[in-house]
Image (cartoon, rainbow, N blue to C red; front, side, top):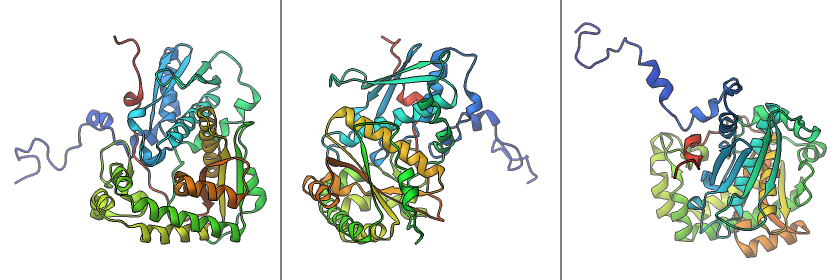
Length: 372
């Protein structure tokens, strides 16, 4: 049979339809290919603000649940928590959910600064779950302040930031570098603790291992986690792929089932303990317990992560002991913190590139208030 003479509709030598390629959304690729030149500067304000949301959706979140929604009007962006994506076992108080929303807010701050759009964020202190959790006022015609403009250099890191769960190199991070990473942008309710002390890090690593065993022994925890584990070839726009855990090929397809069915606490505890011990540095964000503080912690976290990415460093989270009340209390004692640890992560250098996680398209997180 000669090329093109069959009845399959398209020969092996024909180019696929370009329009179909453009329209196809790949959750592991398309969101990260956002092009700043596509900002609709001659479009409506609402269209410009919707474009900024493409950067908001690249923020980190627990289990990559992406628990946020947005409504756009000519004055800015209303930010909502999406409680349908909460983690009732791992995060019963929605603490990590609110921090995830805060991280998305910070990405909007950075993108707005990059495009020269004046930005102001006001948190909702009423506690009303039906109202916006925050409002981001945007003014393209106003002049950005110095603090806003200082965020603009972080813009390129938004699409490059990924959690890296691979072993880090045995390369030291200077104390000055660690301290420079800790700017929280003038926030008064969130503080940062750094440890380059091997003895302290060993105590923290022990708590991480204990937390792994406790969580993995709980069938409900494993069931909830399994619902957010994805095979590497997934087309679902959320959750964590096997590749993010270093699982390649077809083995990633059994990840959700294995996570649910087997208590792998001992294996995970040993692995995570070593990763913690071998990390050049550990970082803890801490503050008091309230929704505004959790939102602010999320903003401080994303500020830190984008700065880490900009500096050529890598990171991954070890929040397990913070998710268990008695271990959280013990971690606070070990570190001598004046308030509650909110997030724990390691920082270091790594030659292995981290895997991207799937992302939802903006249309999935946009609330159309014009519809009845």
